[in-house]
Length: 61
Image (cartoon, rainbow, N blue to C red; front, side, top):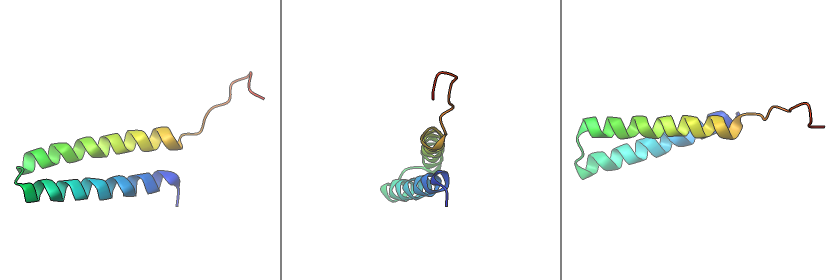
């Protein structure tokens, strides 16, 4: 399994846990959805930045 997939699975668990907690605390579904989308977006951005391979320039040897 790739590191990217592991990051996304972790992000999904965090998102589901926080969404469940927000539901139990009485947050409305619209705010839970908005928060979940933000967390998923951040998770994807972090996963891409952490797993992206560095391109070598002409000076690197």
